Length: 383
Ligand SMILES: *Cc1c(COP(=O)(O)O)cnc(C)c1O
Image 1: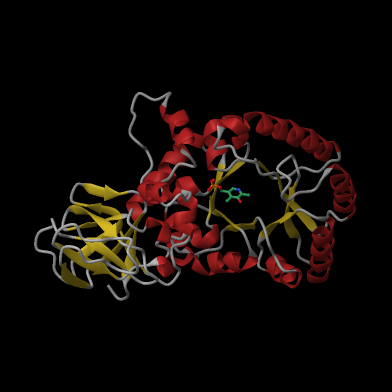
Image 2 (image 1 turned 180 degrees about the vertical axis):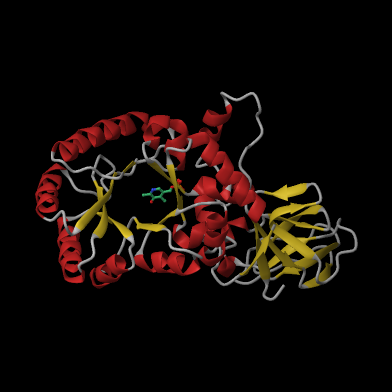
């Protein structure tokens, strides 16, 4: 261990998850692996080659900088799609690099067109339409104008996609809104195809939609959270599993997060432990210090709540989570020594700390816990 903790990434878990998704979607659906937010905290530079090794050829990111990082991590050129932000002065570079990107405003369409003309390279665009999430996308009026612009400039634009984003497919409470979105999507799609524009990929689905609404798979699915071995919500998992004989989770977590015992201390009865008075020893006890804190993505809301694994035992965090440290109760754990392994996420013997336990007790989404994992923690790939 070089730093205060290590993240291990498991290749066979990546293989398992990609194989599951492939089998589920069939060979006519392209899987785009969503690796925004540093590959959901896993690390773009490590995870992208692991996905490439399992045959993934399409990657989705939020912004231009991430696209550059993905591109540098690949061993051969693959498709990279930017779903969100590109500074205007990077659009030229995006086109030059062959990145695909969303068009959600006429201003961006016009800039892309100008740059494509100057470069004499076709801009690879995905037309994103507003269907009811009210986040990004062209509305009907803007789409009509975009169609005219596109049809006047077919030599400079390659229409890679026609897409939208669904407002919460992971929860049944959004069912009606999503049905309305899909209906509107198909209406707008008809307008586009009636005007002789044939997008290569029609796509709307993220992980949840791809499971809950199979019709949304269309030509391409944008799969983030399931790639990493998690379900978008408990509901999504139940929806999947309810129709299966085998009730075991087909997805595997890729990531483990481990640290080590930094020092050990004996505490007298009645003493307060850590900052303030949030924890008082009710009997003589032994504590271990672990060099992980809220600056490392270990939420302060896990104070007096979180658990870690040491020497095959579940140990409680006592007192508040510090900026760089947590204090753990090891009174009933035998032979704890400095340097012993501490599992923050992952397994030890037959025990496991799941991201779910972590996210539930800190009131975070698993997406949130993962994406807060610091970029500078050492990452190791295991087979
Ligand atoms: C993040 C994102 C996805 C992937 O979502 P998951 O729930 O992680 O599968 C898909 N599409 C868009 C537009 C996104 O922003």
